[in-house]
Image (tube, rainbow, N blue to C red):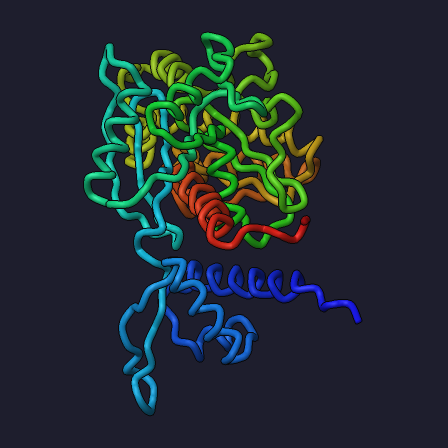
Length: 377
């Protein structure tokens, strides 16, 4: 008689181990009973898998549960030395760096403006190293959100043209780990899709105003990047009477609007909007024009994508600008109804998205190293 094949039992242990690791990552320290309830595994299966994971230094004891009746039960958690991922948000002025563990907990954080003449890659690496002095553990990967078009191979295209992936390669070499580069507005859209205003929507378009106006498009629950990464570049949608190719809304455009309305062009956008909230007539007129431009951009997208809602993020989530957008949208409602929601993350939406993507990638990398995927063998 042929000997039984051992593969299926080995595969079952891998699947059970992955289920327990994912549960601990999402929910934190748990007792064996809680793991049984969360995964549906038997006590024997949980005990066997935990023994295997403890031997691999993937989980560790995490205190006692004294809140339930009966003898105190031991809790287990992911091992604190499993490693870290870097989540980075870059704008035109500064870099914001966080280190996260496999549970998604931020273990360290640094934020600093770029030096006037320094190298941006070295600046980011310096912030990461400062974080690593506070949170010990190997760095497995980094997810970096940047303004500009990001191609499928991780190249960045901005006002200076494509970089051919030079930024990503240089950062990967200096950090000593893989680096994924993503458009910052796309990361903000992923944050909303995962746990924000878009979590209950099948389709939406996030409109983020931060230096410029960008869009993140989600269709059928998935981010749409486009063939060349250009999807969502709403700042250059044609609007009468603007010339073709002119930006619809940016910091420079707001400066021009300030000159037209007799306000200081050196003021930041939030200063104009705060003045509008206080009743300044010129600032109110500026806010109305900004709201009109955002709404017309949304209308152009709506005629093609027809999303359930638009989510306003960054400076576009300022209450004055939200009101201005909704007033213009109401005037178009009979011809083109549009629904506008407000981001739950404010200006931190791209960083929140980077943290979520870094956490997911870290779990996949670490858990696969502990429990190799043998399903295709």
